[in-house]
Amino acid sequence: MRIALSQLTTGPDPGKNLLLVEEWTRRAADAGARVVVFPEASMACFGTPLAPLAEPLDGPWADGVRRIARDAGTVVVAGMFTPAAGGRVANTLLATGPGVEASYDKIHLYDAFGFRESDTVAAGSAPTVIDVDGVRLGLATCYDVRFPELFRAHADAGAVGTLLAASWGAGPGKPEQWELLVRARALDATVWLAAVGQADPGAGGGPGSAPTGIGHSLVAGPDGTVRHALGAEPELLVADLDTDEVAALRQRISVLANRRPEVWG
Image (cartoon, rainbow, N blue to C red; front, side):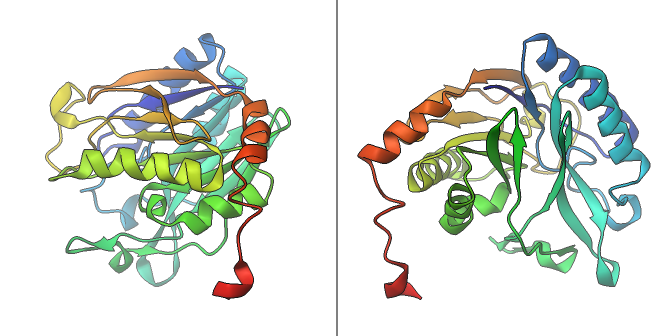
């Protein structure tokens, strides 16, 4: 399966960001991608008040993504914000396109490093997988990458890959953590892991002072090795995922079959 990771930088205006989604989707489709994945917060970058711009999944921004996916004939996965109870929002991935209509609300909220995402964002409660051309793929968002259970749940549901969308904040050691965690989750679940983040705003991605991204999107194979990787600047990564490799590797590295859930409860 050919996929594309759109490492771009979004701003605070959902309308302008939708135009970026359209442009990059067209580029991905022209390259033969069956799925194009955009970062977390593609609708509007972090540092923007989220509740006033949140829209339901049948709202105009999501419908715009659907139109883009339909016109391109490819599945689009993009991060947006949907309304939630108590004036908060859900950090949502919309997956839409030929034969696909699904969404995933980020389960693990970033209450770490002195930040509390849960103050403004409501947590999701269930994993999501999609089927594209007979290939099953899981969906995950940013801080989820620190929790192996989600990726193993994707594998248990029949997924051979996970699409991870992020807006990975800058800071000491953060690029190293990003690569390490992506590779580890791929190996934990023996899945392809395609991880796309917002580009570094200081690397030609456009205006913005919030630490919205560092770039360095990558594709890790089910053995945890890096197969493709980008730098910090905006760029489109196109990669072919060999789904047969997953089955072959799971016969050699039986980490899923060798689990002892009765020990851990």
